[in-house]
Structure formats: structure tokens, C-alpha cells
Figure (cartoon, rainbow, N blue to C red):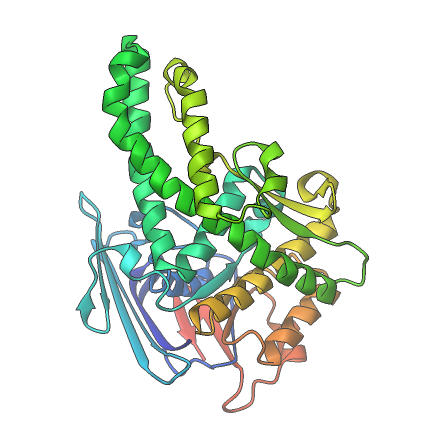
Length: 390
């Protein structure tokens, strides 16, 4: 997939900005901090992922003083099929989002995700390799939701059941209800949680097995060191991790696991007022070497290399799973990389191996020295106070 144009109206500090004739190779967007560079990438994310990568609130994207924003992107698939997406967000209250894909009004954000795969890399994502388990679960969910609509549906149904079940457990804790009284009311939500949870866990386990060799290959390409990184799925309890690859009937395996865990922690759940089993408690361990978790043992440089390798492996995985080349959005990452890694990433992008690439930066000279911005090739855009000029 390649974006041809993008238009932002009342988006962040952009009043009405159109960027036409985007390069199918590398698009560099330069300007001072706060000028509106990242907003271009956020708008692309809004028309592919249905949300910004830097905030969970759609309302903060609306320009101060405006009541709504509009974004329109025009793209072309690998097979040359036009793809047009329009997103409108109204400030409310309540905040309302309306989306159209190729003139068809979409019922929900889930109907947009996966149509045009995209990979995002920002400095904030370093938390994936160094932060808590929730960040690695979020990484898996983002990749798998783009690769599989059925996975995304399971995630949404699981979250809905989890929210309802947690609300009932919290209420029971406050009112001192017994397990015998609560169990019949919990049963429908518990059934849904186990059904969708087992599917999510089976897919996560399979993903980690498929993703591991890709991660290792990209890491070794980016680094001349001897580390052998890996990604390991650890469902709920670390002791179960070694059993996963041996499980022949993966879905049945996780269904049985959830059944057992649900029964085991029923009393504790009432005492603590929350659900204590399921994939929302999974760990996804990133190792820099066997037995050495990155968050504990990796150096700063190894963390950076591991994160870039994960994103390049994500790009490759999504391309193969969706049969469509993802767009690559690199927001201010070159300020975080050393010269060698930065050159490697630019070389890969210029070779065409990374599809259409968008880069934001405050450093114009870095790219002028390295890239060719001749006619029909790479493009550079200068941005000042929410206005862009090629």
C-alpha cells in the first residue's frame, strides 16, 4: 500500500493542509519541534489504524477553537487498486467519529484496521523492550489485529466480557457477596472470557513461534554482535511457557488451561474484586540471549537494536500475512539512533525493501547528504506552523 495524498483539516495545528504527490519511496518531513511534522504521520495512522499512535483521545487531535477535524487519505494497493479513507471527529460531547472507506460508511473502527497495514516506530515505543508486560501485549495485539480481523474481533469481545466481569467482581467485593451468590451471574461472562481468551492465547503463541526467526534475522543484520534474541510467550504463569510448543491441539490446550485457572482463583477474585485469569495477564518475554530478558540485561544500544529489529520483523510479518506492503512511519527516531544504525535503516528504506517510508526529523542536512531527492524519487517536505511546502 502506498499513500498518494493526505489532507488534514483542523487537525492539531493544521488548519487545512494538503500533501499531494507523495513519493512511493521515502518522504522526509522536516521542521522545528511543534511545527506539525508528527501530525502528518498521526493523520496517516488515523486513516489506517483508526487512531493516533501518540494519544488515546480523539478529541485532543481537534485544533483549538474548532468543533471537528477531517482527514482524507488516498492510497493505492500493491495491485493498483485505489483506496480512499475519510475520517471525521466531532468534539461533542459526546465525541463522535465517522469513517468512510471507498465511500462505504464503516460501522466501527475495527472495520478499518487491516485494510492498509502500517508499522509505526517512535521514541516512545522503547517501552516495548524495557517496560511492563502490558506494552508487549499491546505490541502483539497491534500486529495481530492488522493481520487478522478474527483476532481483532476476539480481542474486542474479550475486553467487553472482561470489563463486565470486573465490574461485577468489584461490586461483589464492596457488598460482601459470597461466591455461591455471585457465580450464576458471572457464568455468562466467564464463558465468553474463556471462549475468546483461548483463541487469543492460541494465536499469540503461534505468532511468537512465527515471529522469533524473523526477529533474530533482522537483529543480526543490524548488529555484528553475537546476541541471539528471542520472543517467548508466557501465558499467565512462567512455568507453562515450555509446554506451548509441544501442545498439538493449541486451542484445546488453552481452553483447558483457562478452565483450570478460573476454578483455581474464583475465591481470590471476589476478595480482590478483579479477574485473575486470562490473556490480559500474559507476559511476552523479550530475551537478548537465552535466559537473559532484555529489560534486565540489555544495554541501551541493545535495546535500540532490538526495537528496530522488532519493527522490521513486524513489517515483514504484516506484508506476508496481509499480502500487502505496509507503510512505514518513522517519527523522530533518527535522533535516537547512533550513526551506524541510522545509516543502516536509511539504506534499507532506500533499497525499497521497506516499502513506502515516512520520516519526521528536525535535521534536514542528515537526509540531504544521504538521500537522492531527484524528480520522481524521494521527496522532502518543509513544515512551519502547520503548513507544508514541498
